Length: 114
Length: 117
Image (cartoon, rainbow over all chains, first blue to last red; front, side):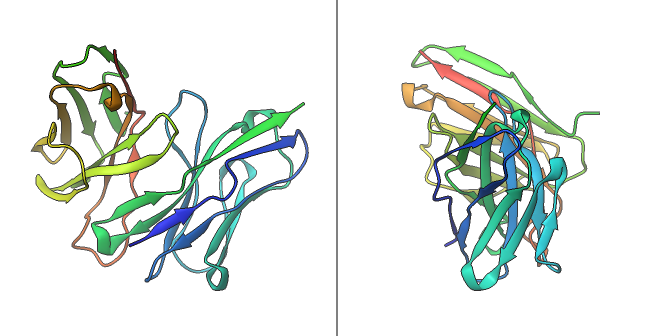
């Protein structure tokens, strides 16, 4: 069965600083990987996704993620954080063989200091 | 032109009541899903339907019953509500589903926040 681990529950970063959120997955086949963001009281917004091809994926809002198969990781990065990036971030793996199920990590809450 | 919509957005009710949450998608997808996000923000799939057929049924109490009148709708009915049912429920849809060989991206609705008092 697939699983996703986000080791950091909370991260605090200063506005303008860089941000990296860690994600490790476990899945026996080709992973389909996603990062979602959830602002307080809001729904899920897709930031970026990896299906195949280039392992460095660009997303919306200046985010990017790198797929490293050898490390089973899909870390999310942003070079310069804005106050509006304060939110909960979820990494997820999609598994066709499991009924097209999406399995989420536990989330990382990002706080942005002025 | 909303892709995946849910009603209501907020639902406050008493323990023991029966309630329904509705989901509709206008994307032409034939697979729909329900996810539950608990108070710790943990998101987990509950059900999925493909062309009105139940595909995924995770270990969810049978007080929860999904109903799919057609492939554009997947409603969630909950009987005898308990305090622990308080959560945000997300509906999602995707094209094709299990008959394809590759994962099919899911599109999420805005969520329904259920509060059981």
